[in-house]
Length: 77
Image (cartoon, rainbow, N blue to C red):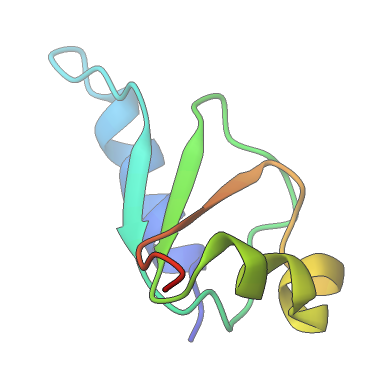
């Protein structure tokens, strides 16, 4: 998955006079490619896993940019 088109579209909307983008909330597994630069709004990726699984996942740790906030959707137990 490339996340770049979504971030480009948000930027286009943000450049319109009547649009204000406060954040991007994305339901995803986070596996994909990202824009090279951090946008000027926060990005939250809601993931189908627990916070513990997120911490253990090497792809999420190493490949997902630090400016993406990763939020687990599922609970332990």
